[in-house]
Image (cartoon, rainbow, N blue to C red):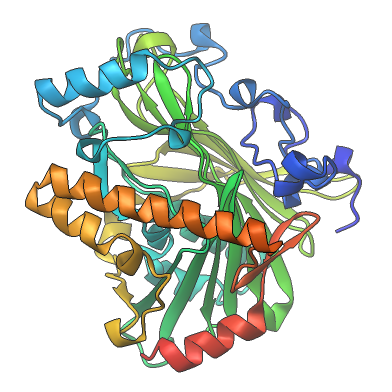
Length: 436
């Protein structure tokens, strides 16, 4: 990966791109993510300006297009809404919401680590990744699977638990095809300041693996909250092809005024250095206060990315929660790039590793009593159990500091460009504790 940064896909207009800062930006100053190291959407040092919260060209949008929220509308009660509005109104713009104490009534009964299982919600699409006959076929298949991992979020004024340092979550996805077997996934909270989650996903029969990481912060911007989802790297082992993939930002908008809902926003890049092909997608947010634009609008293209040839092969356009249509620029032929409803038919229900094999650091063990109380609606007990988890972590970190010890993740190691999976340790754990 020695390509000059200024020639990397997404270098132009990177101020608008999806950017994830690596742990060393906070600690060493020189460590950057896979993409920012190569010039992909390096963005501004100012996190707020690196996320495209409003459309940059409102005149080009259809002013008559009325934003439809439907499933994205707030589902909380008026009393709950008053509560979270009061909680947020006292925050300064740019505050990381994950760093403030959140009462139990504003929590969902699951950890952010568990939410990462959504990567495989349409896992059967992974079957096609290594089956394409051409470089273009495989890029389209990888891009389709990548987009299918985006969750259809509902704005309800609640958030998942902040993972504690060292927390883990493991999942198995059954493809219902003996030839494909199952895909196994492990995620771990590898850093607390800044909060970073890392993941590794592997399907040996397909010869496909994915690893990635994300900062689990959530920035408050006055009328919206933005949650970055980081970067991923998919490898097709038999072909020695690696696909670097950025994720868009989840934006919860209209907290106090304007169109309210949840939407993905920002630039997504899926790039294979070996084949010199890149897919670029722009998830366009609504305009100011939702006065123009459409929910979930996506525009993009697939193009060559090599010296002397950056010609566009196909354009992509549509709405993410319906259909994305790909048009061949030479022939004009249209085909379905991604169909949300059709993908839903291939939805895979993930299952956790057997309870007897769960690590003591597993999310369901760490937060089990809190989740149980939330499901019962017992907020007093939920707050009490939540405090116990957080206090235990504070005591543990204090004891480590006094002993001069440093936390070392079980399954990932820190590098200059982010976090890499400890593949030997992960494969041993998957083999011994994640039975199909």
